[in-house]
Length: 191
Image (cartoon, rainbow, N blue to C red):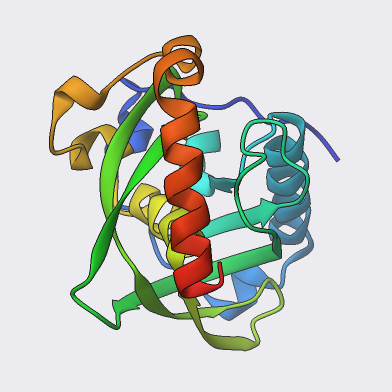
């Protein structure tokens, strides 16, 4: 496995809509190695997720995992999930504000409105169909990663740019209040 270079805001690859991946291509040894590298890169960077175009490969694949993550100790656990050609369907009009950061937008966080409940349909890394629901803070994570596949960064969804802050200022002024809000969301939605 290898660590891949993460594209930063301003690189055109982050603004492309990633292309669909066919079953034959997905099952190829090259694509399976790429998925392994994507996961290793996400873990090495302490990301909660990583989309393929964030590592200069504009295909509709993303990895999501939250497991004792030092960047997001307040996030509910999400086992390693690989989504290929994902489609998200909001199950409610209800939203919540999620303080988000991104490996492609270093040292910046901001409040983003996210749907509270989603249906996720995709293929797994071997081409088997996935169809499940996700809610709460975890739903925000899935929306963030799938946005990348459409060339959307979290900063595009920030309603009030006054919420933008560095990580240090988030920790200093916003973390405590946001973590309390996360607890409320987790209590309500279970994730």
